[in-house]
Image (cartoon, rainbow over all chains, first blue to last red; front, top):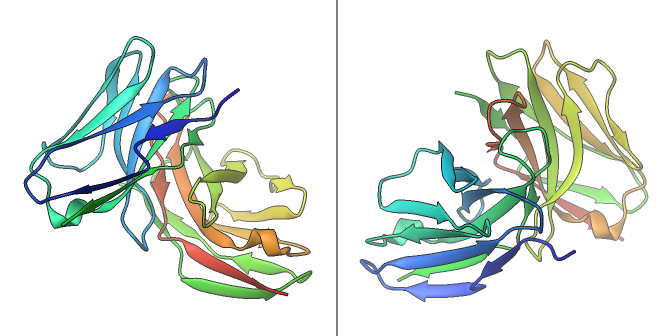
Length: 114
Length: 116
């Protein structure tokens, strides 16, 4: 089975623009979580979605939003980009919305805001 | 809120030697999970080992083992017979009990270098 896939791999945007990042979970996985990893730091939780509903949200401003589609893929949207949004954005999928199953991470999308 | 601290930004080990990475955490919960993740330069995060807080026995996965001290809130990772492929960033992570979502709280990471 294919692992978690994310697109695009790299992205360069200008301050004030909007960006959409995409994630496809492992087949059979219904939960997707998003993390932001600033260079030199550990990942920080942004959102969790399960069965198309938001199940958790980290301490991020409303400029960050996400959704999950019927096929369980997910999009992360960031509006009004700031320089500080430059980071590696990681997607992780798991079978359920609880912690019973392990999370598997994708390779990430590297976002650079100039 | 839970916090995870890794006090060693960088560690170095000779190939075939043993190294221990430190992690401490702060929580008021009694039921939780702890993890060590490896992030090689290719960036994909890989689960190395997990520990359930209710288990007294320390987890072991081949060359990787943990020293879980619940009262001290300490969770260190020991890598035996270090290999060049072990070079990576290592993150300690915390997750609350299984019925409360799967949000992970990560530490700041330790960069492990393996010398040939």
